[in-house]
Length: 120
Ligand SMILES: [Zn+2]
Image (tube, rainbow, N blue to C red; front, side, top):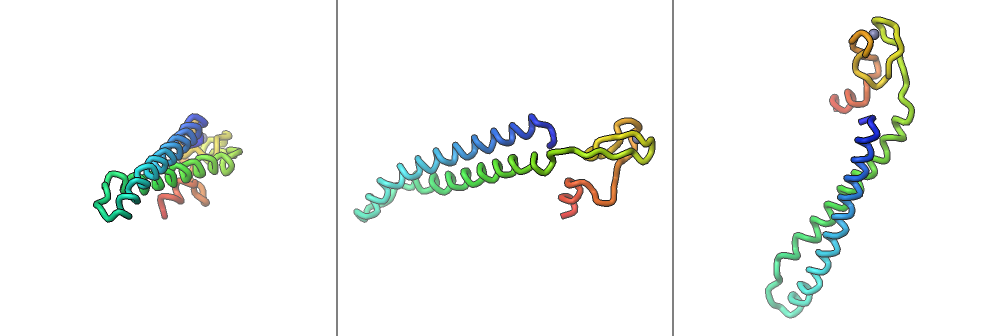
C-alpha cells in the first residue's frame, strides 16, 4: 500500500463513498418527509424510504472511515527506512519482505505492520 496510486485511489474511493452517502441521506430525507405526513394521518407508510436513510448513513460513515484511513497512512509511512540485507549486506528498503538483490527474506524482530495485523 505504499504506492502513491493506491493511496490516491483509496482517497478517491473515500470521497466517492462519502458523496454517495450524502446523496442517499438527502434522498432518504426527501422520502421520509412525505412518509411522516402519511404516518401522522394514520395511513400506511410507504416503505421505500425506510431503507434509504440508514444505508446513506452507513455509506457516509464507510466513506469517512475510508478517507481517514487513506489520509492516515502516508503520515505513518512518510519516510521508508532502509536496512542492510543479512545475506549480501546491500542496502534494501525496510518495507520489503525480502532482499531484491539476493532474494533473502528480511524477517526482523519487530515484524512489519502487515505481519502484526495478521497476528491480531
Ligand atoms: Zn541480499
